[in-house]
Length: 64
Image (cartoon, rainbow, N blue to C red; front, side):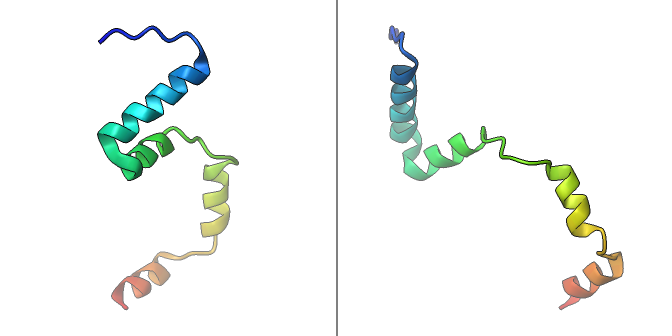
């Protein structure tokens, strides 16, 4: 299949159209979300969130 598409908006539209056709709306959304880099510093945030968490606390939660 040869398709000549020159405009970025047309490429995006055609890509979404094909993804939707082949994967369905949910599959298309999951595929597109793989390329979202998000915002912030994930590593720094994880260290801050988990700085007071102890392994014994995690084990207790798992046993519940």
